[in-house]
Image 1 (tube, rainbow, N blue to C red):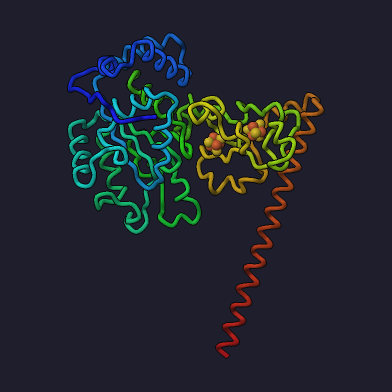
Image 2 (cartoon, rainbow, N blue to C red):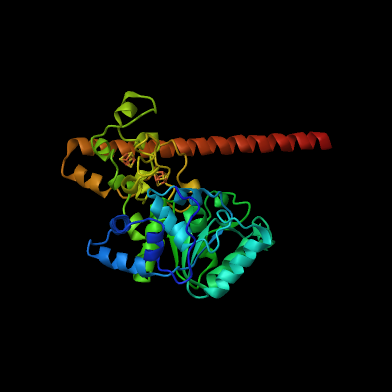
Amino acid sequence: MHGPSTHPWVEGETLGTHLEERGVDRREFLTFCGKMVAILGLANSALPRMAEALQSIKRPSVIWIQLQECTGCVESLLRSAEPTVGDLVLDVISLDYQHTLMAAAGSDLERALQSSMAENKGKYVLVVTGSIPTKENGIYCTIGGRPAQEILEEAAAGAAAILAVGACAYWGSVQAARPNPTGAVGVRDIIKNKPVLNIPGCPPIGDVITATIAHYLTFNRLPEADGEGRPLFAYGKRIHDQCTRRSHFDAGQFVEVFDDEAARKGWCLYHVGCKGPATFSPCPIFLWNTRTSWPIGAGHPCIGCTEPYFWDTMPPFYDRLPGVVGFGVERRADIIGATLAGAVTAGIALHATATGIYQLRHRRQAEAAEGAATAAAATKEDSSNG
Ligand code: SF4
Ligand code: SF4
């Protein structure tokens, strides 16, 4: 975990020298670069280039602004798997401005932001966590008396690259869930004249943030992204296609309730609500908690936190996902006559239909109850008027 530095950065010093000063030897540094290369899915031949690029950089400026959010994304990065990784990003590379981690506060801190933006204009990496409230002139999130939107627009204008970290900065997340009382939106809804790389998750995995910054510093460009602006090295595959429980899905072995024998045996969580078939994320590969485990590995279904609008589209979180898309492999298995896989596919279709019918019935019951309540209220009002 990241701790305060005992070796402050010296003007003009390279990262390689700085790390040496801090007791990080060459082997540790190369191990870190090797991990970044592996996470980014690059060929081993990229390792010398990354090592050369990173060790020779002079302190690049990273400005990190936190808007309407819970600080979970910063917590996630602080708990990156390697202590040197946390140091590299938070102590060595960034901290030109990060209001949760900096010792300064109040107007001193806001002045630090202004001077850092002015000194590094056109060169700094802007990291944004949190959504931007747009209703009531943005009064729901202000820093130093200024609304989040104004702070973001100003910081984005001088940035060389913009990273929207976490579900909030990506699309608004829980604040933007219906009925979205603050009019919360993501960075891409405000900043339209520059590319924004989205690193989704609630929170995202810290190593993905670190690897993205390492990629930018090595190649002077952001990693390749999908149509949603998410880096492909991390979000290019569905959880379902990388899941350690996948063989149980294919074999039709499902947990039905959380404490049944199937749960103890580690079978598939689809029937208790897993959204892995509709979620693109590297959780099964990069893992969580210093690479010890991940939600599905620990027995909890994926709730789809890397997908846009998941608070509204993925519930009920503990019910089967109706209308799952992307089951091509299972359908092919059905066609070639793999009886068991065919039965599983049929079972899923049945469950999805049943879930749809249940939800429809539930919605109709709720609408009927609401209609009855409105009629009763109208009758009461009539009789009191009469
Ligand atoms: S449904 Fe969920 S638990 Fe089952 S294999 Fe897919 S991702 Fe894994
Ligand atoms: S398993 Fe799913 S819900 Fe959990 S962190 Fe990963 S993407 Fe988010």
